[in-house]
Image (tube, rainbow, N blue to C red; front, side, top):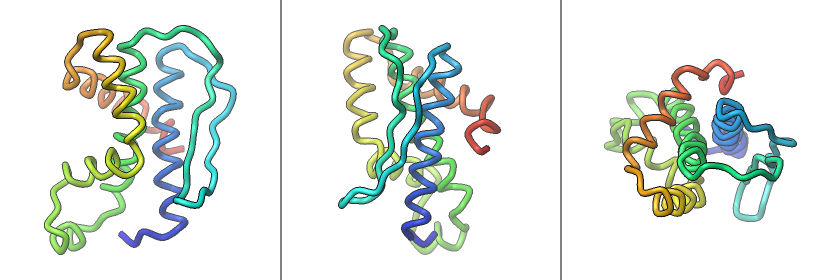
Length: 139
């Protein structure tokens, strides 16, 4: 997959859509979602209405962004590209965390430290939400 500026915008849009859908599933509202060019690339953010949120919900919402982005990347990476790069599907998902999800990982770590839950369980819940709501993310 060529990493063009348009591709970067689409990656970011899927990432932020993952967060936005997760907020809605959690019963939260948000003011808006934005995607902006920055000197280091494209960034995005879901602007939520201030309200306390359960730590486990926060961790799930944080996971949904990189997972949605990773699914977009997987859908747009050919088998030849994966073979040439020596990549597995898990590598593609991990790249979404490492390239655009560093802040999300910090949020997950913070939330799980306070909640004392298992990261694997939180990630499974986030994946299940996206499985069920993928049509909304992909819209």
